[in-house]
Every structure is written in structure tokens, then in C-alpha cells.
Amino acid sequence: MIVVLRLGHRKQRDKRVTTHCALVARAFGASKIILSGEQDEAVLESVAALSRKWGGPFSASYESNWKKAVRAFKKKGKVIHLTMYGEPFDAVAAQARKTKNVMIVIGAEKVPREMYALADYNAAVGSQPHSEVAALAVFLYELLGKAPLEKEFRGWQNKIIPSPRGKKVINKFRGVIGT
Image 1 (cartoon, rainbow, N blue to C red):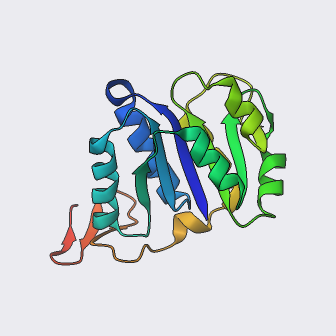
Image 2: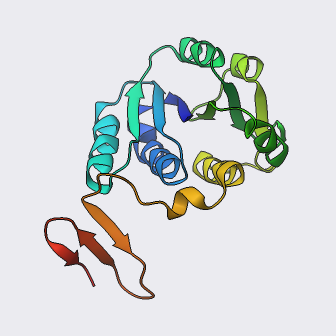
């Protein structure tokens, strides 16, 4: 099981980026995203609607106390904080493959110093400022490879058909839509 913790979500400033973090988490093989920071029902509903439409067992929830969520998870798996200041991400991913449950922590606002201490690993995806969306995608790809990107999600209503040009989507109820 892979869970992503979005640390320090700010309702007005981060809603689009947090939604993109959820999209990446789902597509690249995570099973859940937990928002911490400001509670944002709109983002949680957007992720739920995405899963209903495109399938899969992906879910989103809110946790007001991120430390509690991290400490609880550490009892059953490893916690990996993605940052610019940690160890090389590929070495961390190799270690993470040895455990069954992984929580990946990505920040929105400045990450509290305590997170660095609570994490089992602080993994650096590069050493330059970058997006948490990109860091999450790169790390999950390193951890799980291409397989999650090729799987068919259970319970889909819409499914993309690869096409060199245009958009081809199968809708379970209406057939092929888009061009």
C-alpha cells in the first residue's frame, strides 16, 4: 500500500496543485492521498469524482493532525519525505521496495523541521527547487516502474484509448466519445 500525505494544504492557494498531486498519486500507483493543513472538501470531492469516473480503488481523506497520521503509519510501514535536502531518491526507492507499506510525504507550505526527524527517509529528487507534483511522479516511477501507468482501473466509466492524434475515450454507457 502506498499512501501520499499532502502536508500543509492551503485551501485557496494549493487546490489545483493538490488535485494534481492526487492525479499523479493515483496514476502512478498510490492507493490514497491524505490532506493535512486546511480542510478542503472541494478537493476531496474532486478526487472522489475522478475515481468514480475513471475507476480504481483510489481515495482521499483529511487529517487535521499530520504528526498523528505519520506516527500511526510508522507502526506499519516506512515514511518517506520528498525534499531537495535528502539522500538520493533512487537509493531511497530501492530501500522502500523492501517494505510493503509506504507513506510518501510532500509539502505545500514550508515543511516543519519535525517532519525531517519523523521520516524514515528524506529523499531528494534533484537538488534544485522544483514542484512537488514532479517529485512525486519521479519518485513513484522509480519505486514502481511503468506497470501502474499501463494497468486498467477497475470500475471505470471512462477509459482513454491511445491515439496518435485527437482524444479517444470509451464511455461505458455511450461508447466511443471524442475525436
